[in-house]
Image (cartoon, rainbow, N blue to C red):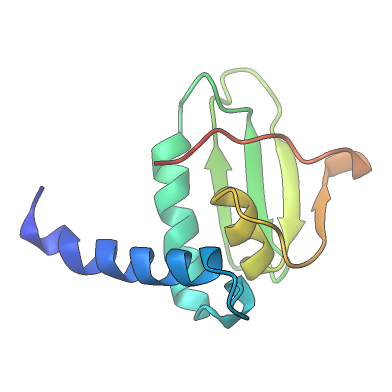
Length: 114
């Protein structure tokens, strides 16, 4: 592993573990640029994986979109919401606010990203 990746790994670890410890910290407390970088990480990990449903995450402000899973010929379920909620969903943590899947259906279950 290149040394240049260590700082990001530590940032990721600190924020995700802070949420996991459940001590009044949620993804609402994580800086927005860190949330976006976390979802970037998850998307890169899940992109093209056949065990991941085809899902497109879209931030409610439209500033960010990510494609997860194998979209080969399948229309992805679009899940929109705020960045903290999308981050929680993508990382497999409890979602702090509402997310809106296409057509009002259920959120697809995502596999582990790490």
